[in-house]
Amino acid sequence: MEPKYEEHFTAYLDFLGFSEASTNINDATRLKVLDLLLSLSPLRGDYNIEHSQNSSTFAIKPAISTFSDHIVISYPLRPVIAQFGQSEPLAAFVIMNEFTWRLAAIATAALRIGFLVRGGATVGNLYHAGGVVFGEALVEAFYLESRTSVYPRVILSQNITGRQSWTELPRQIAKDNDGLYHVDYITIALQAATLTADCKVWLADVFAVICANLRELKSKGKLAELAKWTWFANHVRAALESATPETLELLGLSLEAIPWS
Image 1 (cartoon, one colour):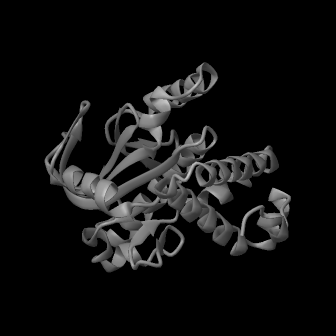
Image 2 (image 1 turned 120 degrees about the vertical axis):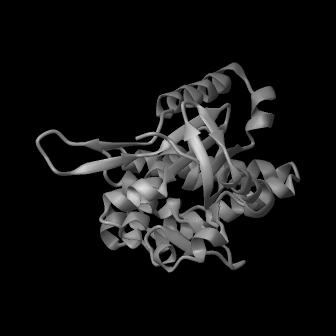
Image 3 (image 1 turned 30 degrees about the horizontal axis):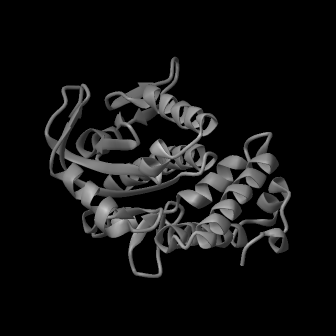
């Protein structure tokens, strides 16, 4: 498929605290940061539909570009909708589901070394192929991340929330207290953790990172950063409170054991 300048679901992601960490960390942490960036490198590539051998099933693979701690992920709408029988609701479900799981994996990897992910997502015209990304959708997604998101969330523009087929996805999209819609990657990350053998260790690591940052930022009076980690901690608690008893059992967790209020 020849890349075109056309409508894409486009997300721009950034790691909070990366700039400071890049200059004020010890060698051990610097190696962890480098490992994270190296793990993102294989994600780069163009949009593609991957068909299973001897099967009618297939999966969509977004176009992804990375630079330092910045990530651009996009899905061209026209070919995805065509792949699903010209059904935009089905295409919206597939795109948001794939993106949310991908975002949860990126956010989980970043969290383990103390970074939070923030971003913006929209639908708009974009060219994204061969390592080149250009267009109004990228500009809008960048401004959403830098000016609107504030907290470690991926905010959705009105170009997405204005389309009914996109907002009727409660598993992937949540409405925050300030009225803004964002991708509910925290709930998906918890679900993904239950599929791994070390989910209890993973949750203990998450709790340790959250508590350490809340404690350190409060002691240093870094209120802007503290607000972001508090937002994240509160949403982790909310996700755990709404989890099924089976999920909590797999994670080895009782709600009373969450170490922050």
